[in-house]
Amino acid sequence: MRGNMGVDTAVTQFLIPFLGLLAGASAGPEAVAPRRCWPTTYAVDGARAHIRLHGVSLAIEASIPGSTLLAEGILWDSARSRYLVSGIQGIFSMEPGGRVARLSLAQLNGRAVLGLSLDPGRDKVWAIASATPQTPNVLRDKIGQSAVISMSRKGGRLLAEYALPGTDQWYGDLAVAANGSVYVGNPRTGRLYVIRPGAKRAELMIVSGLVQSPQGMFAHPDGKRLFIADYRSGLMVLDLKRSTASAIPAPPDAKLQGIDGIVAAGRDIIALQNGLSPFRILRLRMNPSYSRIEAVSVLAEFESREGLDVIEPTLGTLAGGDVVFVARTPWDKWSSPEPNRLQTLVARLCLAK
Image (cartoon, rainbow, N blue to C red; front, side):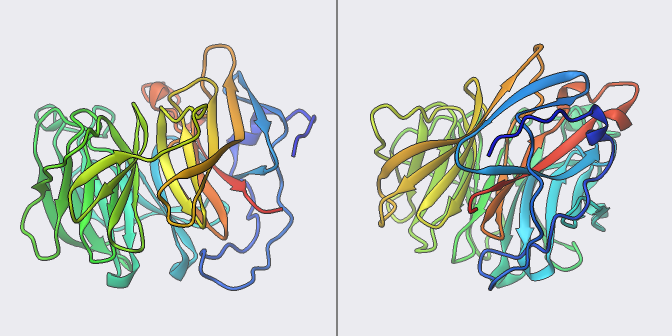
């Protein structure tokens, strides 16, 4: 839906009130309060972004000072009715509405946390920990080093750590398969790694087929396939038994480059595309076997104004049948002398009306 009311910049200076009780995708009927949707145009830090919505609504889930949480990834933990959000300050638990609390995880040793994935059957959370230039108190000789960590779902206790190769590499997202194997992608090299159950180290996968820049990914429930957003070419599928990667057939007019995050939502894959202008959120309607994209539709478009991309969708999660995603992270302004004025925005794309 579209609106035409103006919104003052102060909307980003406080946490948006709780928008309703949110449940996981597998939960029963929900009591959800009426959703407040963004108007067509709104202001952040003096810039304006034009938003076009197509058959969906968009709500602010939370607006958090960047000094508290400079976010990257997000996942919905339905068992505890909370989000887990990763960022350069670590891993946070976030209630619907935006109240955040840092998890007790001293073993991060000052590293940022990027991709997140939940293994509910084993009660674990997996994450990529990296030393980035923006990480507070980072040691210069550690910048670029990354590792995959696993922690307890309940208290955030570190369970294991697996070093990833390279000293100038940036690993993006990761996914957990039904058998407990964890898959990690390197967007710079195109390489994929796997940590198998009981393994002591990450193993380089020898993949037949070209994966150029793996970003968001998820494992299919059948345990046989890994779906990967390749930033350069589009949506890929990796056959985990044969270690073969191939592009998923799509309509000839589909533009699928520049996809960062992907979220499975029934027959659909919701794609967060920030590599083309305007930035977009797409619905990829899959055939029943998930082997072909039958149709591509644009759900939302974000056109930046005045040279500042105030909405840049990155990674998302399915929560209560909707897609909740990191909509803005002010990485480019982190060196600002007033970091409390910089806002991390988390948004909810309401798929069902």
